[in-house]
Image 1 (cartoon, rainbow, N blue to C red):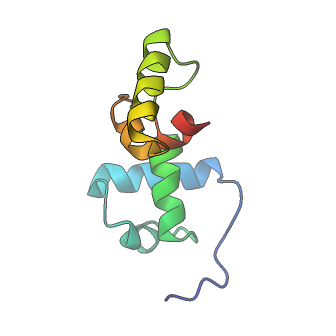
Image 2: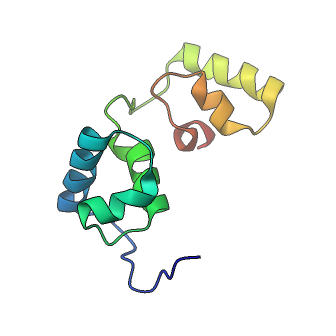
Length: 101
């Protein structure tokens, strides 16, 4: 396991967000272990991946859920239980974090 001493934690800055956006723009999503090397970010790969998936990805929907979305979430929860990533995958633009909140 890599040594995590010295990695930055806490809130992301606008500069860090921009570096991550540019990296994904050039290299695409995936290979998150290479993002800190490619960008110079002092963040772990998991932090980079979660920042992209939950905050920066362009197609993320923000705001209130529509009545149809709520209805679908309730029906899927009855069927799948607390399997939030599976439920979120059926709601385009919504993240698992948003769905389970």
